[in-house]
Length: 347
Image (cartoon, rainbow, N blue to C red; front, side):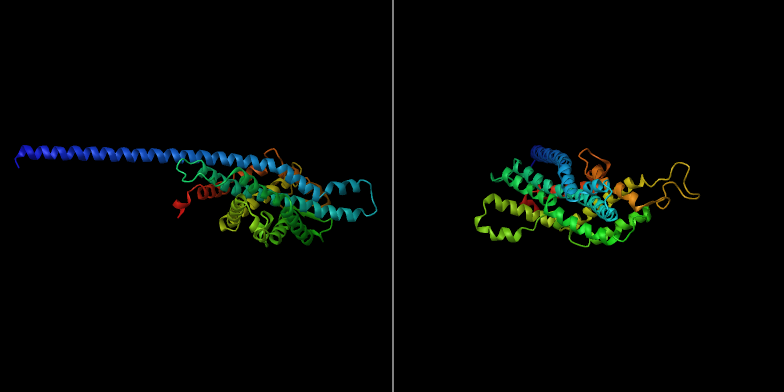
């Protein structure tokens, strides 16, 4: 083969290799652009879903507060005390137990509400993303509207039977810890913190998920013959939720939220334990946890009023702390990622 033919053949090969490389580059860029758009769309949907979570939590706080106050009605006891009854001391003792119980229940139930709704709405959000994805292989929705409503209505357990069970457990722990503490005995903030720690240890020794989700598996199994297709999908969602609630990650996030919630409660109480300006004891900082002690009878109304702050429908520092917590956000992102990824890709 002479030199000219060789050069022409070489040029032809270079030309086709160049065209092939251009085509592959174009395909790669198109794939990258498609994946980027899909990821951006997914991120936008996730962030929108988190805003929905936050708004849902705030909308649920008034009925939660109402349920707590109705069942642990300290106001009726306060009204009785104003009538100067003969059993005044007995009423004060009841008021002590109920005041601490309802505030502690408010912390627990608000934290549970935040993390449970994060799980439920991100499971639903993930499935809705898949339902609206262009590449979805089937026309059967993973989370039809009726299923969403049925599934999300399970939150009522936390506002009903679950809350009642939580109240019973907390009240028993409060009675065990504070029952023998006289009304005239003075407690520092540090001693109040210790009392809360003892109460928490007793309450959290049990399985916390039972307050958040009803265990209806046996009842549903008995009804299996009469279940509709939507019922079956709802049961699957609830079982997936139970799996999440039983996971170590959920336990960690709930503990982080509870620690933050009780820390914020102590911050609120600390405002009432500050010494008057210029009246702090020598050698003690004004914010020292042992600097000021108050009689239990004076601590009761302070603790009693905290439920209005904890379960406030306007975003309080307490609720904001829970909603904006980085570990809660990260956990929510992991739940959404799990349920917005097609099953075939998960495998």
